[in-house]
Image: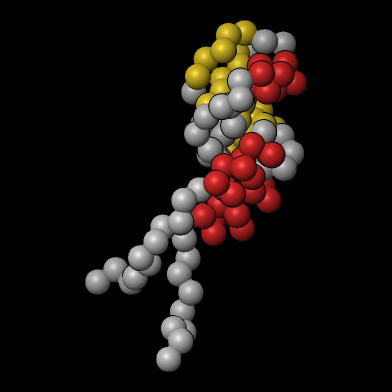
Length: 108
């Protein structure tokens, strides 16, 4: 008998919830990037810094006018004055290359 339930995995949530929300940069949004790359003039200037680092997945222009980046994917949260962007193709690759969980069972 085939299982009646499908397992909801982190990878599924990433594909269905996160990826559609990071296609375009967002104003008043903090994606929790935390590697300080120094002062920049704009979110676009920060994107250029992130683009040069092949491990960079996302970037933000914070309230102090500094560029922050990270190699960890994160959607983030609303935050007045912050601007955030993502390297969408790299985020898609991150998803596509993620290992399967394997041995999925209900937690008992």
